[in-house]
Length: 325
Image (cartoon, rainbow, N blue to C red; front, side):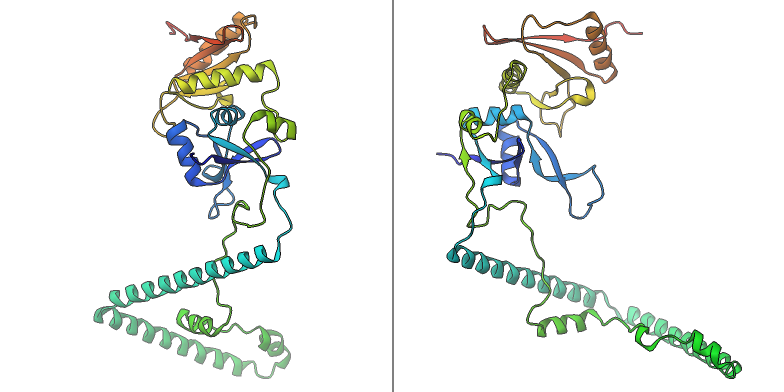
């Protein structure tokens, strides 16, 4: 039996934390979700985001009904660790620490080798010339400072006021090789600490699992769909996915979703879709005009999706602003 993809549920939201699982959902099941995590190197921006992947409620329902995923109740998954579990975790942490130190050492050696290869006799000569000029400038500056000090030697109060505190004198920073030598002698050398996004690696993390919507609803961790409108959205979403489309959020374009002919990374959306839960749902002429003009303005057709719960079918109508201009 194929492994089910874990969906970590928190506050009625389902997240995917594994990049491998996110790739599987995208390539095989046409489920793309929305990245919500901040990138570690760009923490103060919201344009390029990373894991976790937040799924739309319709995506979660489809995956559970197709028995592709399973719901994890994160809030109730943390248990007090046993002595054996704590020991296993400490051993795993030591292994990760050793690998991190080994990687840092390998990177340092590669940089030193590269620096040595780039150093040529001509470059060494130029470096020595620069150092000689720098030494001359420092000597001249020291002589000028000594002459200035002699001229104001009688003004002891001024000298005391301007003299730097010996405790605050800046000491030159040791070279990288010196730092590494110290790190080698240090019983706890510097290393990279990896903070996991989830507790999956913790031996004591045993969250309650739910593989059906009814079980999750009884436990109170997942209640979608609970209304006629939500059930209609789930049915229309399934129908569009089974027709081969990719679906993303469409609130910025005046609809429930954006409908793509393929992966969003390769295609623009063709439709902005709005779901009408029953055949008796009202649609005013003003809404038709608004959908048509907004869709045309964004180079899309507006897709009206009507769900008939008795016949279990979806009726589609597209609206475009024809003969415009």
